[in-house]
Image (cartoon, rainbow, N blue to C red; front, top):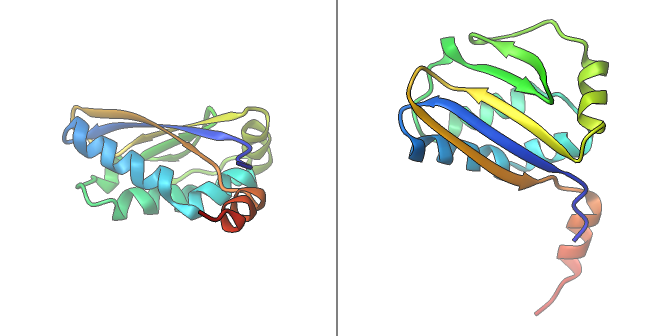
Length: 129
């Protein structure tokens, strides 16, 4: 349907597995996260923000994010990282791995989602029943 890539969203540190799944689902369903994936944009703000509004409690001081194997956010703060290298790492794979720690709980989840391309929007907006 026009999707180009996928995200494997891995959550750790939630209070339980159900809350980890909810956080992962909100990240995977976020249009802003999906479009960042299409643009190979290592935009930590979109991912961390989606986790924050997902509903379950997160512990900001423990939030850490690795995107496509590159750590870009640790213990509640963005890191100084090579954005071009992170973008290239995202572009080099069809499945971008997002590893997000949201606290010190035992809850974990993995959730897969697709990106959101212009072709995907066009295909689905022209589809009629």
